[in-house]
Every structure is written in structure tokens, then in C-alpha cells.
Image (tube, rainbow, N blue to C red):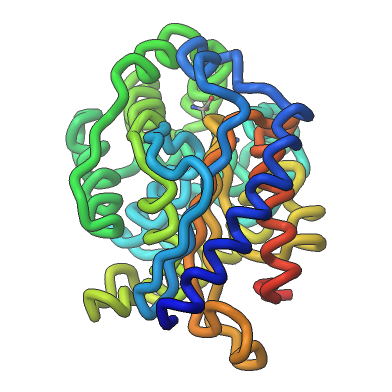
Length: 323
Ligand code: DON
């Protein structure tokens, strides 16, 4: 994209950020994790990175925030890279649930069984337990290594958020015990939980999420470093999971009205992967792009209220839908 287009797109994005910022009032910061309650709910920031390296940003883009459930995308890909897709799918399925992200109901209803997908907590805790290594540190390292390879920088775990989650993870602990009883876990409950909660506490920025989204949009190939970072078949399944399960029990509506593979987290982060669109050469980012958004006020499903509306608007204006 040339400099004039970058300036024009930035102006548009700035306008849209200001227009949708007020939607934060329809949600509130996650309060079940005390450390997340402190965020400023009115913040809204976005970064888009194109396959040609163009970066367009608007709003508050420098605040770091914890990646939360967006890490489920990385955990799933890390497990597939370690064992192959077929082996991983013996432990988690690829079916949407229509239930809350931390629901237990389907584990009870489908016995013997496995978590419906890796984007809900039951699936992500199962994935955390099966990562290579026998300690929480070694398993977490597999996820961090992939995250760092994708973002191209070293990342840190927010200890305050981790401690806060660890002390209040009653439902996740119950889920993990339930999974253990069903023989779904490949490690002790405490190891799986530590990996899962620490992966959720890794700090990122909207630019980091946009970079990962761009690589996923390009089927695992990083056009800037000219390197295949994740195999195409793994990325294809991951994007299908993002489209069908990435926004929890709002995934159907999100697919219908936004139409891009995306994943949200309770800290208010959103990551979207937009593939190349042959029919939209005159619109921005025809060769695909990644989008990172941060808007900490979330709705009852756990998705950023302002972020959702902002992404919906951009997807319509710039024809980003894959559907
Ligand atoms: O499992 C939890 O409670 C969180 N650490 C992650 C949840 C999350 O981000 C769900 N999101 N929408």
C-alpha cells in the first residue's frame, strides 16, 4: 500500500474507532479475574497488518494486555505441530457447542467423550495437558516458542494476572478434575491448569495479534520473513475452528454478520485472520491481513463490545468476509 493509501485508511480507521468506542458502555471489564477489573473500559485500539507488510493503526494501540483465550489458537496449533492433526483430534473434537466458554454441561452429557473443541476451556485444558514435556514449564515453553516465532519477539507472562486467575480458578479447576476423571487429561490437574492459566496471562499488543492473524490469513506462511511457520493443513483447521467456535456462543452470529475467522479473550482482545480476496483488488488488503483489536469492556459471552462492532463495520466496508 502506498503512503497516501496508508494515510487515508488510517483516517478511516480513526473515525470508526471514535464511532464505536461508545459501545464499551454496553459491556464491562471482566470482573471474575480481579486483575482484569482494573482496565480502562473506554479504551479501543486496532492494528491491521497486510501481507505486503503495510501496518495501519488507530486508537490506543500501545497498551499491553493479556492474551487470554486467544492463546487457545496457539495451544491447538502447537499440539498439532508436535503430534499431527489426527493424534490431537483423538483428544478434542472440532464441533461448536453453543455453550459458554467455561461450560461443563457437555462433558457430563457425552460420556465417554472428549471436549467438543479446543476453543472452549475444556478443550484448551486438555490440549495444555498433552503438550510435550512432563512439567508445566516445559509444556508452556512449547506454546511460548510458537507465540514468539509468530510475533517475532519475546513475550512475558503477567504474574499479577496469573496469580489472580490461579486463586480464583474454581470453575477451571472443577473442569480439569472432571476431565481427569474422564481420562481426557495427559498430565496432573495442577500441571494442566498451570499451563492453561499461564498461557492466558502472556502479554501481547494489538500489533502482535495482527501479525499472528496475518500469518494465519496466509495459511501459516509469513510473507514478510518468507517462511512457512505453521503447516497449511493445521492453519486451515484452526481457521475453521475460529470461524465456528472462536467467539464462543456468539460464533454463529459473528460468522453471519462479520464473517472472518476470529478469536476473542476476556481481557478484551480480538484476533482476526483475513485470507486473500481475489474479487476485491480495489479494496484495502486484497492479499489478506491480520487484525488485532483491544477493547476491554466485554459482553455476556466474553467478547469485546466495541471491538465486535468495529470489526463488523470494517468487514462490511472493506469486504473482508470469507462467507
Ligand atoms: O479460563 C479463563 O477463565 C480465562 N483465563 C480465559 C477465558 C477467556 O478469555 C474466555 N473468553 N472469552
